[in-house]
Amino acid sequence: MTEAHLLHELLRVAAQRNPDALALTEGGRTLTYGELASQVERAAAGLLHLGLQRGQRVGIWLEKRVEGVVASFAAPQAGGVMVPINPLLKPEQVGHILRDCDVAVLLTSPERVPLLGPVLQACPALHAVVLTPSIGLDPTAAASGSLAPEAAAQVPHHMAAVAWPQLLDQPPRPGHRVIDTDMLAILYTSGSTGRPKGVVLSHRNMVAGAKSVSSYLENRAGDVILAALPLSFDAGFSQLTTAFHTGARVVLLNYLMPRDVLRTMEREKVTGLTAVPPLYIQLAGMEWPASINTHLRYFANTGGRMPRDTLQALRTRVPAAKPFLMYGLTEAFRSTYLPPEEVDRRPDSIGKAIPNAEILVLREDGTECAPDEPGELVHRGALVGLGYWGDPEKTAERYKPLPVGVGGRESGLVLPEMAVFSGDTVRRDAEGFLYFIGRRDEMIKTSGYRVSPTEVEEVLYATQLVGECAAFGVDHPVMGQAIEIVATPPAGAVDVDVPALMAQCKQRMPAYMVPAKVHVYPGPLPRNPNGKIDRKSLAEQTLNR
Picture 1 (cartoon, rainbow, N blue to C red):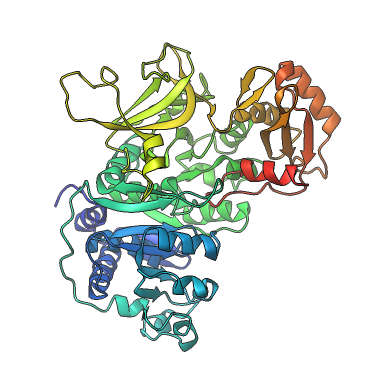
Picture 2: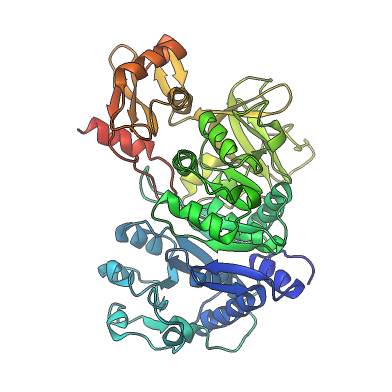
């Protein structure tokens, strides 16, 4: 086999090419590609032994661990579907996911299974729970295959309780028939706007994404990629797929403090880092070990626009590293990137379409916008997902047939092509570069103007008088909505100088954009489970005070 078409084939091809190359590091253990591929093959056989049928879902509720990675590739190799569940979700949210997509097998840890309690009883499709070794358990004991009685007691009697070594104790066997358009994964959104909803992705989506992203990041064998994002997040899982496609090594990191990220980058000689802006904001205010600049080849953002001052601070910390500014949709995995050579000319741009994708900017009537005319970002191509699991209404809102005459759609094509209508407002300049304006459901309508909260936040960061901030609209009898902000003190300060901040806002903003109120938040702003600042939750908390 020389080319991968299915997710698990990424590993198989890499192992055939160089079985002794290092593939995955977690804490003190590192697996080669040969060892990792062997574990995946055995775990797939174990899932089949448990009765996993074609297309059945395998839930994974773990912090970043080797076992979680193995299960993520073993489930599709067996012919099933992986459902990575964010480890920060609460038991009620986990239960919703398990029931929503009828998870058949759940992989979790002895430390986590007691938290689920009655949740497991209410999951009729779940027939087996696989428990990893306890964190910190001696490797010899972990390999024994025994299941601690107290952990097994947490699993309902009508379900099989299986120790991880027992799952691996099966001879290899062929999985169910799978092709690249089959369902591969269900990635659940954070649920900050309600219960989590599952985005369904195919093998083609993820493999095409791996090939596309690794091509412009120029990933290669010998790279060391830090997996700091949750693997339940599309950009987080992309760290695995891009690495395995190119034969690079992935370092799994469950960090408590931003300093842990820098220490790991220094220790493991990380060459590639992808993170969300809130983490970069924290890292930009720290001193970086000088050695990181000798090996970090690139840093990339996702999950929101990088504040310009943060970007500049990072470039000062690691001048040898190339910055990649990216934009992605879980519904289409990845969408755009700005090449490093364009960053100085257009630092606010989200770039152009990634390889093998087309990004359109459309009016409400489906026609294409003129240069610099705001419109909806629409993504077409091999990365467009399969919709929202079990939710035809939400699917119809986002996944729509591409109009005739738009992009590559000629009138003679009879079958419809589904594209993702993102709900994000962008503009495209005369040279084809895209600029994010805001999400339709987050735009602030004040005094007859539509204001993007990210535009307000960008100015606030530029003042250097805040640490983190979030802007949102509050109902107002005259203006429609008033702009309010929540901000934390800048590094080294104990408070926000609100008068000075407001003076800067009046100097830098048009009158309609100046915040009506500043709420000071003492510590880091709350995040959703994907690490993004939770603007909606902050707005609700502020209004309920």
